[in-house]
Amino acid sequence: MARLAFREQVLRVREDAIISCVNRLLAEKGFEQMTVDEVAADVGIAKASLYKHFASKEALAAAAMVRVLEHGLEAIQAQGTSQSSPLERLKEVTRWAIRLLLSGQMPLLPAQNSSLRSELLSDSRYLDLLNDVSDRLGEWIMNAQALGQIDRTLAPDVVLYILFARACDPVPAVMKATGRYSDDAIVETLINVCFNGLVARPS
Amino acid sequence: MARLAFREQVLRVREDAIISCVNRLLAEKGFEQMTVDEVAADVGIAKASLYKHFASKEALAAAAMVRVLEHGLEAIQAQGTSQSSPLERLKEVTRWAIRLLLSGQMPLLPAQNSSLRSELLSDSRYLDLLNDVSDRLGEWIMNAQALGQIDRTLAPDVVLYILFARACDPVPAVMKATGRYSDDAIVETLINVCFNGLVARPS
DNA sequence: GTCTATATAGCGATAGAC
DNA sequence: GTCTATCGCTATATAGAC
Image (cartoon, rainbow over all chains, first blue to last red; front, top):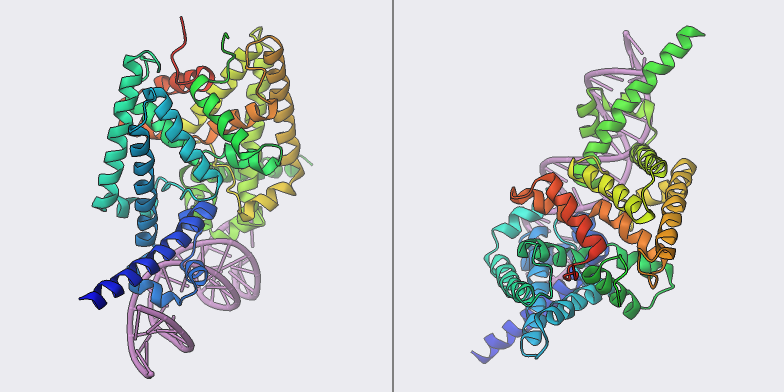
């Protein structure tokens, strides 16, 4: 029994290492451009061994997406215990996403017609987590609108889409590539533009 | 001489039809997912014939990118003859880009590590057009900042990146997929959020 | 569960006849 | 300049020994 639990732990650690590699490669090149050979080489095992852990390339990516949603949910729950306003909580979670993107650890979202899409739509863990994240953020959005902090004329789901889109925005990478901006400056600039817009605010 | 000019015209019309197909496929699936077989089938000619017109898949995509930049430059020049303020001109050109995206005619920008990138960087027509577009928009941005219409604390190039990013934003497609928003409503919502932000403006 | 070796399929690009 | 047929390569996935 103890040996079984030990083996189980070894398995989980190994698979966690695999998911980390997948996550980084997905962030670098996206699903279609990532190859299973790369993943295997990166983990340091043979490709056939990889397929003993995950049934397909799509399953690899799905596991990475599930893990990032779990971490996102943790970030959301951490904000839930704070005393900040709904708007500040939304900003802080968005900061978390942009930082993840900047550090090359945000797996790119599935493209429109990807084979990954159907696999994700039949993965209950993924769907449940996505639902949970959406519900919690959606509540904050509506609270912020009730307080007059977020534009009431915007549909809450549209606000949610726009915040999700910050997690796959190409602008942070472009700004970083210029070498003229620190990560913190990039994050704050994008948070500012996302919530306050490009137009000058009266101070 | 007349026959030569006629043949030249036939050639240009044919190649224009090819570029239209490439443009649509690039908008649908992006460069890596688009296949030359699809392009050939879509145009209605054999793949080998396609390669008589364009040397490579990258050359096909480059031609599409050049054409969309030419159209963008026309949209910019059309605004240049208007009496609108710099801010309004920027909004109008951004509207043009979002409408193109919504109608499935905006070829997706090259990914980070694409083979397309190096080809584009050695295509002087593409680089010249991109420079021209950037210069004209950059001038409007600085004029708008001088007038206090755009936040002066934002670097002009960052504003330019952000406007370019509206041309490959996933949010319009997501909103359209819900079936609950008209194209016009999507365009105006995104223009509003881009320039005014998510936070409520004092009216 | 790990490996080497391979089956299978799709894609970019080309050969060669017309 | 158009076609059919094919090359050469790469990628996902699997077979089978250990």
